[in-house]
Image 1 (cartoon, rainbow, N blue to C red):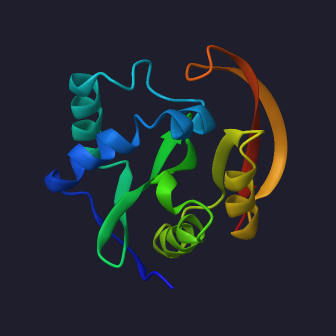
Image 2: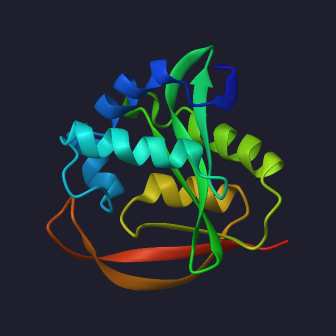
Length: 158
């Protein structure tokens, strides 16, 4: 079993993260992404904001010491939400579930919300396994798909 850990995102992670966030299948499943995943300048600016904002938490997800993605908490209209991006080459191996469990231990804000494309069954399973409950759906424009799609909204209560 891979030993999953969280640590602060480091400069050396950024090239790999940029590549992970451009993977076509990952982008399609995430659905709600940056306007242009190939825009490195926009990516670097976004990551600089994330890494320096006192209101946000972003951590690198590692497996046996190897960088596998990120997980973070941010706020939308006062509600705390989580997001994660895991290397597609390790999907289905429990990495996201273990990273989320570790992250939930360090982030005490509740309720905590999450959103995922409704057809992203893997992410829905990860979130529900961690105790998130579906509280509804919304229709929103998914730039990765160039269309409005259904998004599932989940909440983790205290």
